[in-house]
Image (tube, rainbow, N blue to C red; front, side, top):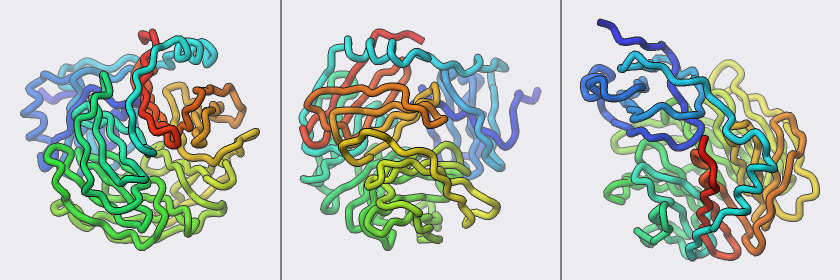
Length: 355
């Protein structure tokens, strides 16, 4: 009996999902492991797969050439829903929630890894830090990073950290061993995403006003080479948010504006479009987060987050006194993790929301 499946697509959760990634395995091997115990299975073209323990409540069906989405239990997910469409009700619940705080010096990105740890890097001291995501107890505090760390991301169970000089370090998320050092040839990296199942890495370079594309040349050991770069039509590309393999957003740290990059034909042809400029801003745009309702949350290393509709209309603002917010990570039911750069804290907020 052939299992129900869809070719050339994957199930892409809006938030970190209850799933696990397996590398160096064929789709047939992943199906054998699943043994009908998982409701959904993404098979990637690079001999990797993603097994879902449960269906995500919010998701996209994303086009990925030569991928395949299986439904081993012959069940299908409910329609993706916007959990909290009323932004003022959401902000009221967030403000009424008790925060858990942890000290961390000038933290950068907030990510949740495959161990359910909150992970960040300290820009000023160059430490790599992991916290228990429940109570923010510190788990790991390592100083093996290159000077002046500017960003950290997770992809396929590997951490990637970048420093101001343009060197990206790949770190195994289980053993914390250094897998490789990747030279980008540009300074001032501020953000990083992956496209095409990791075949393409895209970084924002503030000092050179470039968006740089790198091609993967080896999976083991991990290796990337510069493919090409695109001069941005704005100053200091900073935050970057992946929508799919053909679309991503970039913020301007200097202009406090948002710009859309869309693939046009070949992998080296990308069109840039101005989207919006944030108004009444007293800081510099740091990060963009898009929630399940397609609302855009902008941080500025100030106490206030601005929230916009995707059409460019300002919806609301959210202020956390004495915070200087650098990044926010939004999880299911609007559990939030926030890094506060100048005040040196990580914050966990869990509102009373059940979607």
